[in-house]
Length: 118
Image (cartoon, rainbow, N blue to C red):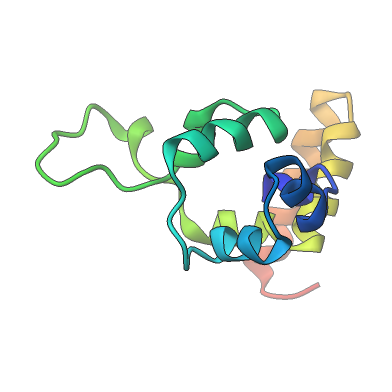
C-alpha cells in the first residue's frame, strides 16, 4: 500500500534492496517471509517507521487488550487503500484544506452509502 502511495514500482524498491522485483512481489503477497533487517531497510525506503508494517495486525495470543483503539484495523480498509480508486480518493481528500468541507464530503458519502446507490 505504501509503495503504491509513493508511486514506486516494485522494480525501484527491488533495486534499492538489491533484490529482484519478483522477490518484492513475494514479500507483498506474503508468500515469502521478510526478516527484521529487510523490514528495517524497507521502512527507510518507504519513509515509514517499522511499526507501520504492523498496524492492524492481530495481537499475539495470550496478551490482554489495552483498549479499543488498539483493536486491529478492518481489513476492508487496507484492501481499499491498496486500490487505485482508494489512493486517488485519499490523495484528493488530503488536498482539501478546510475541515468543514471535508466533514461535508464525509456526510455526503455516508448519505449516499445509506441510500444504497448514487
